[in-house]
Amino acid sequence: MLDIGFVAEPVGFDALVLPVHPGDRQAASDAPAVELLPGQFPVPDDLRAEATALLPAVEHSGAAGVAHVSVAPSREPVRLVLVGVGDGDEAGWRAAGAALARSGATERTVAVALPPDAGPAVVRGLAEGLWLASYRFRLPGSDDAAPSGGRVMLAVAGTEAYVDALRTARVTAEMTCFARDLTNMPSSVKSPAWFADQVVTAADRLIVAHQPGGGPDGESAGGPDGVAGGLTVTVREPAELAAAGFGGILAVGGGSASPPRLVELDWHPEDARTHVVLVGKGITFDTGGLSIKPRDAMKLMRKDMGGAAAVIAAALGAAALRLPVRVTALAPLAENMVSGSAFRPGDVIRHYGGRTSESTNSDAEGRLVLADALAYAVDRLAPDVLIDLATLTGANAVALGARTGALYSENHELAESVLGAGAAAGEHAWRMPLPSDYVEYLASEIADLHSSPAKGAGSVIAALYLREFTGELRDRWLHVDMSAPSWTSKDDAELVKGATGWGVRTLLRWLADR
Image (tube, rainbow, N blue to C red; front, top):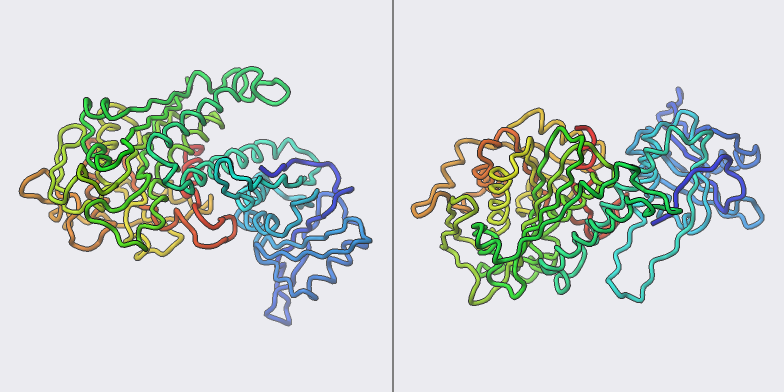
């Protein structure tokens, strides 16, 4: 990852970044007066004069994420970067960081002149934008080596107020990029077993990094109360799933030559007073099964495990940050394929705990594996809060577009807290209804529930179906259909074309607030 740190004075660098904001509106014009923000250290008069003259010349608006690079080989620094921070809130600085990452300046040594009133949120936003927009996916063994990158140093008078913010930003970005890597990986590699192995490896690395001698210079990265004793991974294979009655996972994975798995990742610190279970849909590839998808709808189905990637990464992030809350992530993993052993439209599936579902559409498979995991969480883990994330329906995009998740919960306080965390993190969701008059659509003549009634309101019906497996946790359950925002077709601010890692930043913010 890009090297980001602190420096006492912004001198001796290849590039100097000066933040710009719209300023106060001029009395005689509707156009905003674009201004340079003052730095914690004085900028040389000639540089400030040059930058001030450049603003109107390049028609810089000061809007968040607008960047202009001025190059003068005879000048020190050679590059002068004017980057807009908008209102100067965390989102504005995140956009500024993303713009800086794409400006080319970060290939060298860069100093950023932070304003005197910069709080921790400024550092967190700027760093997250830099790291997230610098992300590149590379296949294992690829000759396309990752760029070495440069150094970005934040010029501040003292670092004490900012160290924790930078550390939190780094962990958040690392875990978001881990979720992106998992989701971007082609399904020719990404079997359920491969995914489970990645979780085990990531947890092992985190444990080693937080043991004495595991951090930089032989220090313990986690201190005396590191993660080693509080982080565990359990992987259930088909025989164990069958013995325990995970019928939904087994049915969906039954048509594939790559058998299903259930991964349980548990962060359990000694000082935890709250237990949160996170469940994520983990369909490593979705053909639609016997209800097969058309080719165009199948091409990106490697992303159908984006929910599992997000909850696993969030649990690992909670451990890396040593948050004092117990977090258990459940990732039911299966590949929905076409074969003689695939489950059929019209089959009745017995889930963990004994409830049955009639499934008349094998392309509505995600809710079947989630039902198993939710029922298991209620029965065996008894958490205080139960949250699931799933790339569940195309109806999410129809209702809310490409950047917004559909959030469902009967608990107003829980819903508002997650929506607030998402807004602060830059991951937006919209609360959707759970209308009681739609529950009758779930009725089946041959099973307890009909999992995929073709009655319209696809995202809503899927949420109502999942709610049936939350038992006594119904009033402490929250579901997010995040199919649309899990992927972007173009670079956009801190998002890089491909998997977005959507949900990791929201969950880590929310867990920290617990």
